[in-house]
Length: 191
Length: 191
DNA sequence: ATGTGCATGTAAATTGTTACATGATTCA
DNA sequence: TGAATCATGTAACAATTTACATGCACAT
Image 1 (cartoon, each protein chain N blue to C red):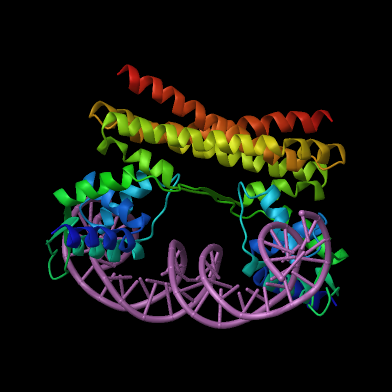
Image 2 (cartoon, each protein chain N blue to C red; image 1 turned 180 degrees about the horizontal axis):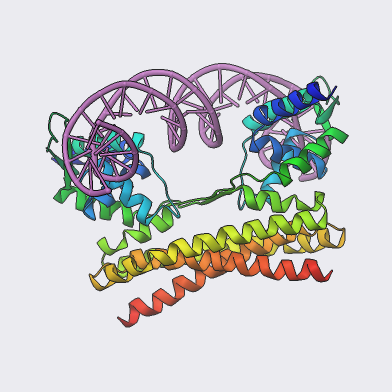
């Protein structure tokens, strides 16, 4: 029934949003429970995406209703618990989403840069301090990313190349920010 | 009355949040009306901060109630209109905020990087296309930022150095992303 | 026994956006 | 005179987070 499946496709598109696909992608990579999904996000994509527990459980329900993941009860004692695996349909729908040409806005929200933008209102010394805080923040981030670089290299050897790419992207972005900070620190100290 | 002013200080901190200070900062730089503030944000800090009109007008009211800006009615015909200027207290409070050591999380939300992270689920050719989309997006952004670079240079000559810094930061960030994309495009085409 | 990490889930609050209603001004 | 832009403001909606309630498993 081509009509029915076309309708179903449309329904899916309107029912699922980006956070749902993030959850689906993490289930595909082997995260079985809501908790594991949360931790996988923290360990891998938190540099450019976050998700809270309160979003994950409803999301898993939607994905299961849409037939994209399959859940099995696996209680711990008297406490209910549910683990998930991706379905064939889920794999297909994930690829469809990845292939979908849609606007992918790069949304940055950074109070540090906002403060720097307004820093002409500060004394030179205070502005330099702020600049150094922003630099230090990026340096920390680079350190944190370098700490998980080995895991990325390991994943690459297993055939998953792209997690390492996004990791390297994070490192490159913050190293670029550090360079600009240092250039301006020198410039401001000279001038 | 030291007690009263201390209490007042605390009130300010709990009443005003980051978007309010962004509005205050833009008023300091000469944006007089809600509309001008909206446009100033679009033209200058939209790379790392956005704000919607629906936030600006209530924000201006809060700032005026706190005595940080002064509003004057300047109607256009029968349509009410209000323009603002920063007060002495506003200047001080802005500097206090800029100086305040507080967590300044670098929050990036980028579906492009999320898709890249999961791109091992794609065929090589489709993944390369996605990579190129992300590269092109950054290239566009660099172009847009370069288009306003002249304004930043002009501001620098007027004594406002930091707007140009944040502009250069945006350019550097996206150039770094482009480089990583290009490196991986070569790598994937080889391998 | 007790604290820490694993784990699930919901309700309330917060935050921010979109859509809408309205009207003035300017330029073609 | 009609379209585009300037301009103000609110109400409804959507998205996301925080706080809370609950309890198992394991190591010390």
